[in-house]
Amino acid sequence: MTFLFNNSGVSKVRYQITQETCVYYKVNMWGQLSATYSAYTVSNAAALKANHALEVGNRLPTKPITDLVTDYPSAAVNVSVFGSGVTAEHMTYYGVIYNGVNYVSGCTTRWRVCILRKLAHHRTPQPSPRLLAQP
Image (tube, rainbow, N blue to C red):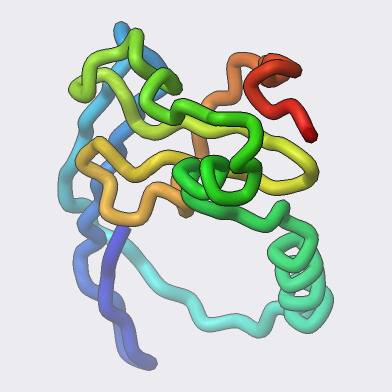
């Protein structure tokens, strides 16, 4: 959503809603609407900012999924098998959480900043012990 505003008014709002949750559910909507603007002070703005900073600070560290190869060289991880059963047109991105790190693939969809995407989380499979075995 994007719009311009100042003390005297607001432009029309342009919006785009796109969703990719699975192979069979992809939605694209866009348009332009009239809007009104009323200035007000957010009474708990400091708390909202602090809560946001806390949430961002508590996120798992993220690395490219290819780092599994260098982070666990003795495991002989073959990252090409991750997501290999899904064609690129139906893949947003994929990943695995291991030892407190969120290893994620590159963005293979129309999204420019995949890490900011809110995605449906259908399951968290446990990695194979052989896949990420420690020496």
